[in-house]
Image (cartoon, rainbow, N blue to C red; front, top):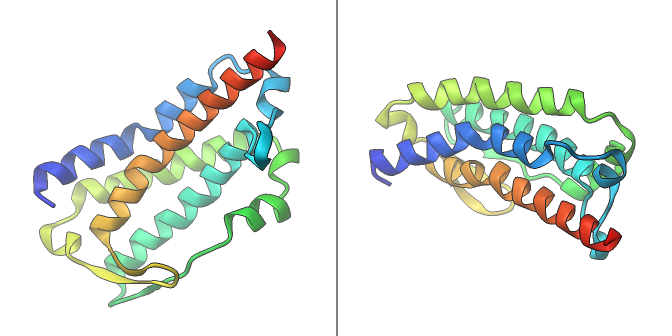
Length: 161
């Protein structure tokens, strides 16, 4: 990956929180908790997932930067949603956690050297896992979930029409 490609992904990563907030703007309580068919998450559940995922992602990057060849542990996101009561908790603290984790991690991304970008470890589920791979995943993650929230909102509106 070139430095220019990384810079673009870092910028995209930094915009992820705002993209999610924009997708949530004006959401109504019933709409927030509506689930599309097929067991997909509600917008509220997506926000809680983002808070937990971003916290885990922040630690993953820190381990890649500090530890030599760390093993990055996978996790069961469905179990997190179920056991941590995503559907029953207020969303605002989760949004704040998501924002804070993103902001502090963005600071690290901006300060990383070429040597930092070459650091890597092993993911317990997918194998080789580098700082650049981390960036590819998490620069898209919030944007993908913002799109999911928008799709949920469209489904909710269509169902009511």
